[in-house]
Length: 303
Image 1: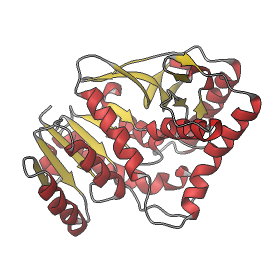
Image 2: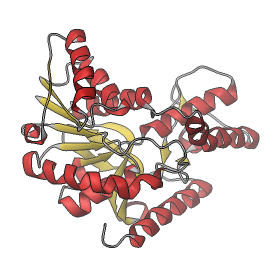
Image 3: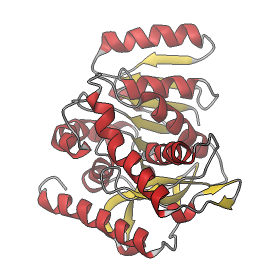
Image 4: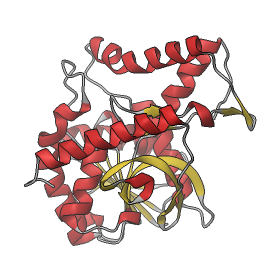
């Protein structure tokens, strides 16, 4: 890939992604776009010092031309009084209307990675309203899996690398897939009490984070996850991870975007993997599907 662009690069998410992408040789150009030009220039001057050998610059929508990958982190500022990502939907739809139209105009073939919230609904909006192909659109949800792994380690009093996938909505109805959790390719079994504690850690995290009343969101975690996706997009071989993607009958669902296991390579989402879920996980995933479908149906003029 020769060029990566970040829309919303002055914010916490965008600037963190710019940093983690710059740490690797993923692109010859890194184009940064944001309506807050002074704030963006502040980050840009810092990045230019840190990476004098890289072509990093402030751009406009027209500079999206030639982008292989576009990362969208733009959105309304974090409002700490909100306890649900859905509260940002209509405000961010207005922003995405402009962003999507400009991507369609200047870089219609680019892979689009969306990290703005509510990501499932915004990813689906780009599909329904802007004419992008399903494989082009990757909704970023890896923070849920990272948080699941953190909660597992906290509960088990360990500090180990675990495979801890989360599927479903990037929100209240997310589904930690306990049946797929592994450490060193070996299944981890959990007691009912341990599962309950892990669920509680995950369920209350977003509220506790916002209660700190700090005007920033999860920049470092997102930067790490976006770097993982960019790495997968730089490879011919596929990498398995979870992401929000548009379903067309997989898992018995369609006309939504939702987090599922996918294979990502240089062409975007290569395929969707359909896991055999245990009964309680399938029930929870179906509930997550119905929640997103209900929101879509409640906004017929939007979707």
